[in-house]
Length: 147
Image (cartoon, rainbow, N blue to C red):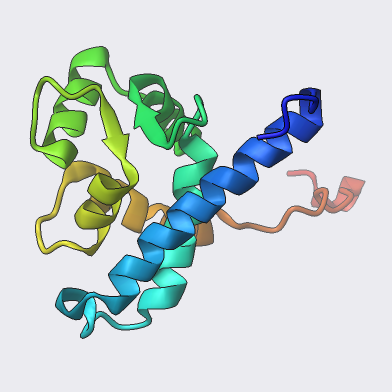
């Protein structure tokens, strides 16, 4: 990393390096025969990468407890600390681990096991489609409309 970079430039460099690391992990999943039968794998991996980068708050390549909390709050599903720890251990398979790596995240999303977090993320899009309503201001009422 360029040590002379500051502020937004340093952040941009950090994000681009993180994206390169995640892309290389995606490439290994694309070449893996275990996931060869997965339908539309490359677009799924791209979507997972974007979602993962959005909630990697410390930019270390791992989602910590606060990143998971923010992810669920953004989806309107605030959880207690104990619920978050349970979700985290369900994904990583270890109660002592405090972060979700990108590999853990991909294994959860592409795996057959239905973790709570996987179900929440999969149905996030469906909820958004249902919530979309007419965003125009209400039509004007006249005296004839009154009861």
